[in-house]
Length: 363
Image (cartoon, rainbow, N blue to C red; front, side, top):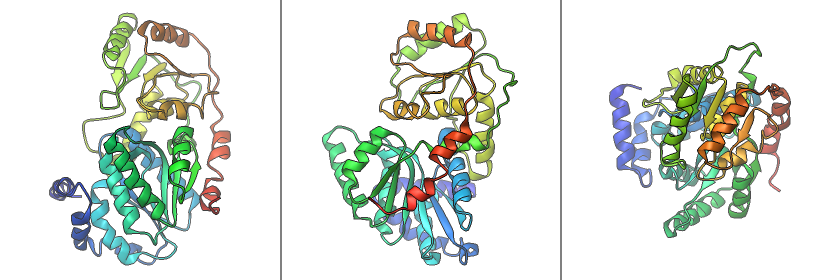
């Protein structure tokens, strides 16, 4: 996308934050943009992020791998988040009976990132005749009057769709979804980024060194000042400490998404220990056989995801944000020996039959 077009898209998305109708109307300008897919069976992957959260970009990469493997007769068409609503009219024009929508996974069902929730609701409401699959998600609605109002709106829209499948990525979200979205098909499966295990090869002889922190500084941060106390304490003992994050201060267009994800994976595999409170910090550490201390998040998505891999001995969940306790665990983990994990068995258990579970009738 040209820079001028991207700036225009950002402005339009901000003007039309509430309901998406203006962006949908402007979609007439996109007619013809997907002409080459007119005769193919298509999967439309909508709401793909282009912003600097590489964990979310890893979700897109893993989802594309999964969809290509499990639906070999379909073309997977990835549509940028900022272009999704403007492209829907063109999608409608070439839509066929066997086509379906896939919505970006992650942790954006609910009020935490409500702009994404509004877009998802618009799509679900606008296309009741299209099968829609939401990739593994965590759900969070604020426990407020406004949060309850938004949850009720979401409930009505989701339940009105006759062919909506929701995948929860941990048991806490799964339980809520089953209670709330009674007319939808709801299944549970680990985060889709675990599917990248088939693309990652980490040798036992990989040269490692140092400690990397990968800690939040955004609205989901629960460490607060403890983060700085922890970093200072680590720096006193470990001069090879690196402070990093899975987020970068730049957009990541589709052309370089794979390289950005691969670069982050390579960064993780170079360290002897990672300390993180990011879900995908934990997942990428696990996938690269990197010892990792994981701290809680503001909701239950990290502990819920950790429960899928709690048998991995080099991933340890820290149940309290106490600096002395964490430092003691660091020293213990830096001197321990760990087994590699059998990811092929993990994929066989959770992903090989996922298409079957998605397509079987709702119970």
